[in-house]
Every structure is written in C-alpha cells, then in structure tokens.
Image 1: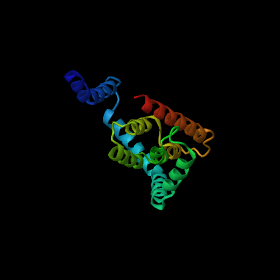
Image 2: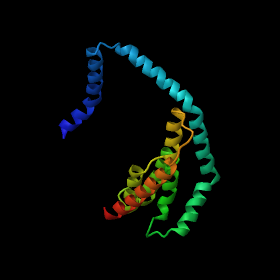
Image 3: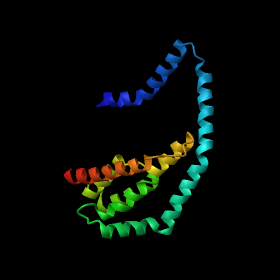
Image 4: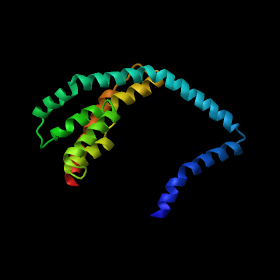
Length: 174
C-alpha cells in the first residue's frame, strides 16, 4: 500500500520531468513553449469568461428563485420513488448545470441519509455517471467558436439519463 502512495505522490513530478526531457531531446525551447502555451490558455480564459459568468448567474437565479426546487417537486410527483428516488432529483437536475452546486446538494443528502445509505451511494454514483452538460457545452463550444451544436445536447441528455438509470440500479445493488 505504501508503494502506491509513493507512486501517486511522484507521478506528476515524473510526468513533468519526462515532458521536459522530451522537449530537451528534441532541441525545443521548453520554457518559451511553456510561455506560449500559457499565453494561449490565458486568451482562451478571456474568451470564455463571459459565457462562464452568464452560466453562473443563470444557475444562481434558477436556484434563488426556487425554480429548480419546484421542478424537482413536480417531477417527484410524476416519477415514482421506485423508479427514481425523489430526494435525488434536485441533485440530478442541478448537476446538468453546475457540479459545485450539485456537490452542495450531495452533502445535504449525506447529512440527512448518510453517505453509506442507498441514497448516499446512489447520489455518489450519479456524480460519477453524469456530466455538467450545459457548462461543458458552453465552455468548450465557446472556446472553439462553435455556433451549431447539432445533436450534442440531445446526445448529452440521453447519456445523462443512461448515467442516472445506471446509478440508481447500481446504488440499489450495492
């Protein structure tokens, strides 16, 4: 076990050393390449910043207005607990917009039901089986200036539904 701890502590410095050695052996100006990459990264951040601010404001407004809670309540009356637990609906909905906001809801579920409960395990699996669809689409598409997303949203929603179903099934099996 200690060997794995040493490896996990050393993996990033080793990886950086390998990259540096690769650059030196290929006679690259490693530091200048690093600075060029940092400049490009900074330009990317500046380009997507308005989208991120808008998305974060929208999530804040949806949470503060109670819309997400109302939507979860409505869906909870439509979907039986045997199919999808209503306590997990807010986390499932918010996760599509913001992972950090969903983490707060996950912690609330842990406090109320416990992390080792069926709901606690299921919500943990949900976090791993789903993606922040709208955040990811806005960041990546804005950074490469894509305006027509085609089937991305539909595919992401289908994949999220599959992840939610899988997490409920696996959570009940564990």
